[in-house]
Amino acid sequence: MNNLTLIRPDDWHIHLRDGAALGTTVAHAAAQFARAIVMPNLAPPVVTAEQALAYRARILGHVPAGAKFEPLMTLYLTDNTPADEILRAKAAGVAALKLYPAGATTHSESGVTAIEKVYPVLEAMQTHDLPLLVHGEVTDPAIDIFDREAVFIERVLAPLIARFPALRVVFEHITTRAAADFVTAAPATVAATLTAHHLLYNRNALLAGGVRPHYYCLPVLKREADRQALLRAATSGSPKFFLGTDSAPHDRARKETACGCAGSYTAHAAIELYAEAFEQAGALDRLEGFASRFGPDFYRLPRNTDRITLVRQSWDIPERYPLADGALVPLRAGARVDWRIQP
Ligand code: NCD
Ligand code: ZN
Image (tube, rainbow, N blue to C red; front, side, top):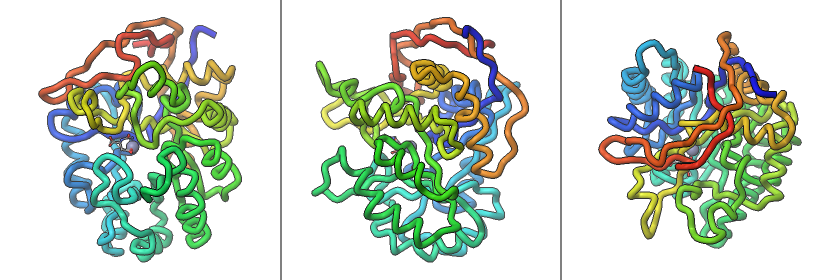
């Protein structure tokens, strides 16, 4: 197959950042996706509907002329989110709320310190039908970083789903076989996003032959058996698994340093990288469901009506892209990708 036409995909998990960085991130996202669920982990975080609307306007200000791109906004849950913010969020068209366990990842300092603290908010979300997006890792220092997702399932996620059976939950950027199995067996209210990098790489990419900071993201890359399980889930045709890049730009200097930030940038070539992963699994025919149908169905939004065509044509990914007054190193920098979006 040398050509693949798909309903235009959406990205159900992206970090666009703010300010001048939007010039790069929004252009990349809008070149591929019709819509994106925009993560709220700015510094300071987006915690109110009013802040989400203001952030949305800043993003729209960077959509290139002629492009159509709809940012779907999220709020960052804190221990102090008032339950009535849910009504304001609903009225403002906010798409979902994001749970970051405090300390789990980049800009999660204001996150939730104990899940019970947000039960009243989760109750309101269940009533008003706003989905919860979960960064699923425990932060207990006694738990090995490679086990944090699996332990989160037992300690937090399974009890949460049992307590709020009508709450729609997206287990974001899953990285383990345990998570794929859990989502498969969970009720239809539970779905998961999968990144291109977790479908393409295991932890050897990060650690074998030298430490490669641009492959460091959270949750961290896992074993090959986990990657295989993620690939099976993504290509299974199950509507519970859909595309979320978790594209997370950081300035090069903050990645290539003694204590580097977590986050891999994939928005420059996202659908192309997913196509490589699906092709590896012999399942290119399943890419459209994953990239363009199951996400809007879960969020109860219409599917897009326009299409993109991917052609088999290698191109070299640049070493750098500008990012505000610095630069970012994209995933696969200086190397090839096999597919290209037909202009
Ligand atoms: C994200 C970021 O940089 O904002 N980093 C990452 O490694 N994925 C935060 C997140 O989604 O965990
Ligand atoms: Zn993320």
